[in-house]
Image (cartoon, rainbow over all chains, first blue to last red; front, top):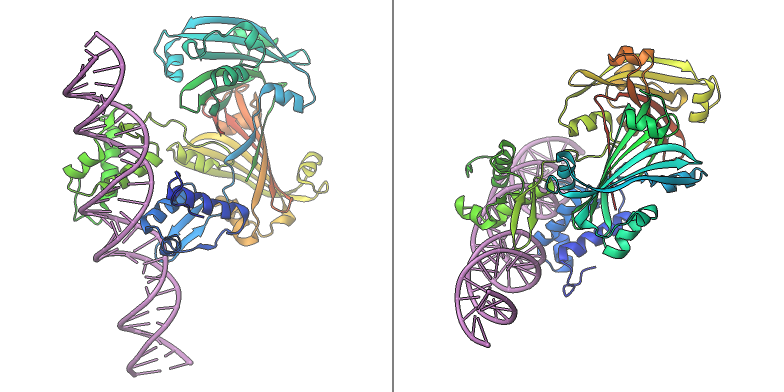
Length: 240
Length: 240
DNA sequence: TTCAAAAATTGGTATATACAAATATGTTCA
DNA sequence: TGAACATATTTGTATATACCAATTTTTGAA
């Protein structure tokens, strides 16, 4: 379980080892973990090193400690893994519909204050503004506005945008999106939205804001999407 | 800042002290925290003790460390927790708000066709109907209607509903919720919703439908929640 | 047998120390 | 000036040790 010559820290190896036993079911919720001093002796490492591994797992909710009693396997955490919230294209495909998109704007503009803040760049710094209409079976479903710092991804063309932006970023720049924060809220359509989505004024719409971050922590994009409430429903599946 | 005779652990005192300086604005995001050895010397404690305090703050996202450079004040955390299957109460707590709820209906009614289908029971079978208003800081945020098959959970009382329904189900029945399917859509408030949520007619609202399933595959509940669009935003965090 | 005291076990706090690894700074030499 | 090297500083990993606090187990006397 422990290789002292490994470049990986001992506490990390121990952490992974314990995690694996939990996930495989060898350690069941409620079970007591061997005492810290036992681990220390068994692997001939310091108790403090064992503690470091266990502390991390406690922080990640895999374990919990009770003073004087021991350390125990925690109940698996419901939530955390949201499957779903896939891309529009995938989403439509899953519903058996033909997805397409129409590019209506592709420009470099100076960022305003709010955008600069979200993208962690200076105000007025150039950003790509990509505006698209998302359609399913040729019916407008959403208006999508994407903002990407211009200096982050040079040589972006309309053509690329028509294909996969993420694919381009991965292939040419070797960057991967690590996480995304999304918010969903209800609102009423503004003028631009009613126009492109072909809905009446004051119709209810769903607004989704997404901020995507790369492996290295750099904010890659800010996306603001407006969905027709009468045609679109978000599905979120939660498993444990 | 540090009282060695206090019953509170030193690392905890240090933790609170640093946190206070961050929250008061004395330490600004991006600022470097004094080095660990500086703190150790200044308060005449071990560097390891300082590390324990800082490690906790790093885990809570108040600080972040860069090897060889130092420890820095993190950007203020706006939206840490995802609104996934976390309860309204937890959700509000995460946002630093006081959550409460008002029970406005608790009855056993015969299920209609649609409900029976969702719950996988026969039409007209009895179900609990629990109607609640969810409040944050005494402001109505959502109207929540929960439906549970009556034969699934006998002896449910108003009092239990006021506490935790899930807790009751886990403790008394030993059942765990395994998964949930949620849909989110925008709509306009109907009469009942405008009344309880204290909003104007035709206001936009967010409607969340949830179907929760137990370990054994039995559908446990159907929840229909209507959220005020002007006060509530769903946050979803996705990580790779 | 019963119950209270003592001992053992477990996690919690704290110290001192050592070296590794990444980064920043200063210095030297071409 | 500018590049290469050495040095200092910072966090990261790991060990050994000591005692505290809560809990469980064992012991022993009534």
